[in-house]
Amino acid sequence: MYFTNDLNIKFLFDFLQVKNEFEFFLCNIVCILLGFLSVYVKVLKKKAFKKGSNGSETPLGMMSILFSCNSAIYGGLSFLNYTIDFALMLIVMTFNVFIFLSTILGVAFGYFFYGHLLAL
Image 1: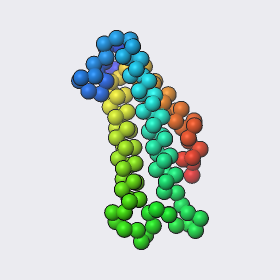
Image 2: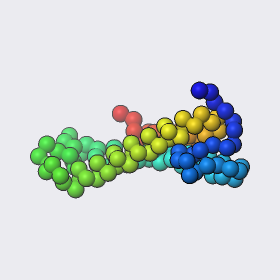
Image 3: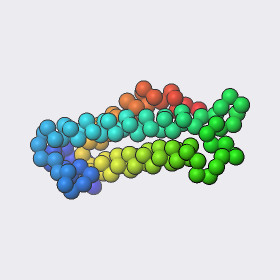
């Protein structure tokens, strides 16, 4: 496999065939937004379940109910996070230079704006 700069690509699905420059531009914008959203969802997940003032995790303590509302929120955010990350992986595997750079740019913007919230 090799990287190419061809504008005619299949964007994640067969029915999303890019045929002109405007559609290609929109796909690049989508990649930037998905990369940014990937980091933002990670921040939401960490912020929603950060440690409380007493040192115990507030929503997911040891005595929480197995199927509580907080567990459902955490599971939903995890599902969304992994879905976006795997979609980005498959999009990058089109091996298009511009799509790759757009994805990396979106993730970089996400970490630029929200990376300090993910720091240990």
